[in-house]
Length: 201
Ligand SMILES: Cc1cc2nc3c(=O)[nH]c(=O)nc-3n(C[C@H](O)[C@H](O)[C@H](O)COP(=O)(O)O)c2cc1C
Image (cartoon, rainbow, N blue to C red):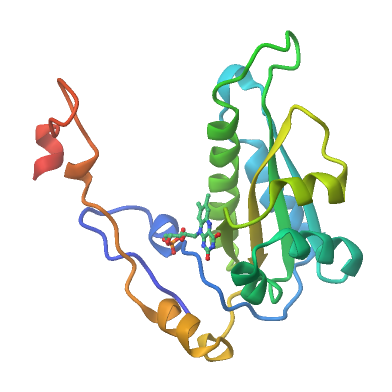
């Protein structure tokens, strides 16, 4: 199933077509494709080119590690993410490696890396669904994530599935239209709260 964004202004089809479904097919992700997803993350921009991200990844055939990620998810997310072909946790290093001062863009850069991963996935017919609903401390314990590294988001990755495979409430959400604020609400100029004229049109 595709759920392309109905945009106010034209954007690239990869951006229109990326979305966060909860239905996954049981088709496994070839290793060569997994490598390309993380290669896309690798080429994200980052402050001082620090590349402060790391990903803990488990495919479904690695049941031990897949279940460790699944076990860190909140119940709602585990209910559907268990069907994804791969689960991951995006982790950010919170200080700079060379001088140990705080990197206030670490989470931002890790999000940018995951955004590129999502776009690459879309280009390859995969879907990605990020999740804040997980327990970072459980993830830390399960994977021995060191101090100074922060689990930021869990990620379900796989090929799209049939919305009919979902329980009724989730199926309704799967089929609901995608919505966004208009750009005039968040593109400003001059002083806070003043919409940039180009964005008002
Ligand atoms: C950092 C982050 C955390 C999210 N957490 C959850 C989550 O815990 N559970 C969930 O079902 N969806 C989660 N989502 C998915 C969002 O709800 C979804 O991206 C948003 O509704 C926009 O839908 P779209 O991605 O299909 O355009 C999360 C997305 C992001 C980027």
